[in-house]
Length: 105
Image 1 (cartoon, rainbow, N blue to C red):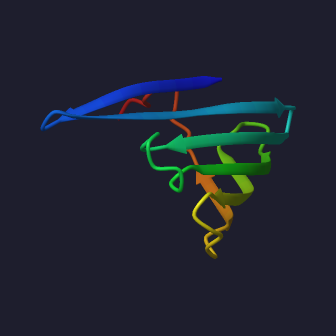
Image 2 (image 1 turned 180 degrees about the vertical axis):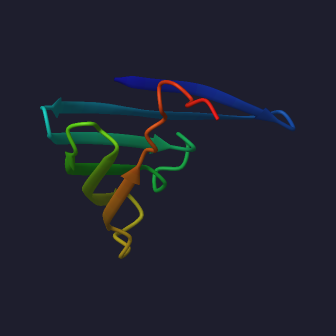
């Protein structure tokens, strides 16, 4: 869980903003699942700029964790009306395996 509140002061104008997220995740031996909620309100005085994201992820990893594949779907909710900006991402993450000892030449 993360949450942020702040104020921006510019030319005697004060604007309050907030953001945060809540994440639930389960990691098994080879499988990963996750659910995440994001909240972003860049200006509390403007009642049409709040954005909320809800994401669901599933993933698979090799036993040595050098290769991971994630499928992430995100639904975006805007106060100002819905735009076609929902996302479906397929992510392949490779991590090189570094040898423990460097062989002698």
